[in-house]
Length: 332
Image (cartoon, rainbow, N blue to C red; front, side, top):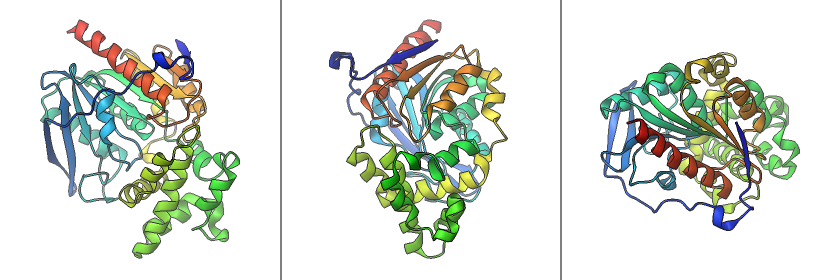
């Protein structure tokens, strides 16, 4: 099923975020390999369990992520992945891989004594959400996926080597700046060298250039607050280092793995939400996932880019969590 929508159709049709809330519980959980993850719970103690899977990898959770769920109906679990946000050690790359993150999610689920939870993920969060669901489908009640990234080489090349550069040639120059001309034929590799440099200034300069490029391409119309968030060193360093580490390792996935294994989750209620003009994760990947998984609702936001905070996308996400709350409650 394909649905098309536009945030410009009617202001009354747009959904506001739910009110700001604070966690009723937060803690650190050791997951092995020297990593401790920050976890928080919001909403109803006895609500429908839902886990928010943030992007990047390395971006960490933001407070508005809590507001994409009805706090009167959901028990909302947010966690910062290895090396990201408030998890420790910060920006660490050791034993940081997709398989470890999948097992971390499962460890959190068991620790919280949750049988099944709704998995909500956007961008890299859609990658990890899919990877988790394909390993543990019996523990997933529904999937909300946004800005699809399947972790493939062509998707990485589009944003970091050649593709989005044609749309944003002015911003591209700032992304190129830290890299010597002789190394620009392999930008991810060149950035990796700088992001893992022993020199702090080199690491931070590269991180800000990498993350600012992402922030500038994340929204259709451009929003300075998004750029500023990405460019903040507390976000940029973990985002750039961890993303680049994953990209250097093919996201720790085999070729087209998430599409090949989608049969494991085709029975799970799901919605795929995609901005038509997503320059970070172009719509082709969402379309390929839709073709492989026609049972999932596919919703195209006609006047949006990549970010979950764009009006049309956030509206579609809230509509999805509202609808699944009713569906899951009805199933008992």
